[in-house]
Image 1: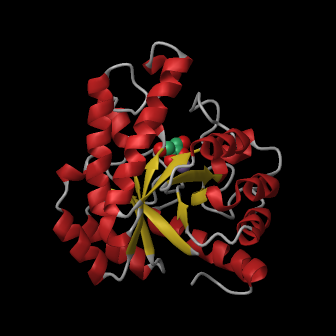
Image 2: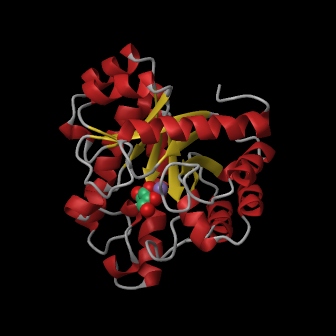
Length: 277
Ligand code: LER
Ligand code: MN
């Protein structure tokens, strides 16, 4: 298990992203603060210098665990469930570019807000059919680039389709994708799951990625989320992926980053008998 920090070039002040700024600036900070993995939220991989990013990751001995993709939904409404084939095409092209960025690290591409909402299609049924078709394309694409895709289970205020782990598990089992699994997020689970440990065990090997934050979306340890239960659940299913900190950056990026890591390592020592690998 690796704990990753989130970073972004252009996140707004209320976005749950830990580090903000150029990769050149934030990647050394992540390393210095004790991280070995980075989850970068990128609006469009065609807007960045990939070679330079790979070089900066290498210099700082960081792995690119995952790419957050929601900014393209915010900026251009690109989503995989839309009524307009052109919008879906733009979303898939954008996700392909992220796969190229993640390829050297076999990273995971997140489908969170890019899922779209029921209102983006003619009907809930049409939305589900569009999402399904897009996911089949993404599954083939992910195989081509040897990366993974995480379909994020987001709470029912932010998502209309598959907003709890039970439904996500059923959907994944019905489709049998090779490269697409569930991406769970403790903030969303806190709203729509009744038993965190049970939900994780129910998802089992379908869990491919985890977003972690306290119940108030501050750094772990700030609120009242039971991280022992979460880490015990992940241990029980043999989860070996990333725990990516999708938290507010308060009181300040680096304080938040250091407190998160100290607290998670403390709980990991208890549950796993050791800190992150
Ligand atoms: C939003 O609440 C969230 O959890 C993001 O990861 C979605 O892209
Ligand atoms: Mn999330």
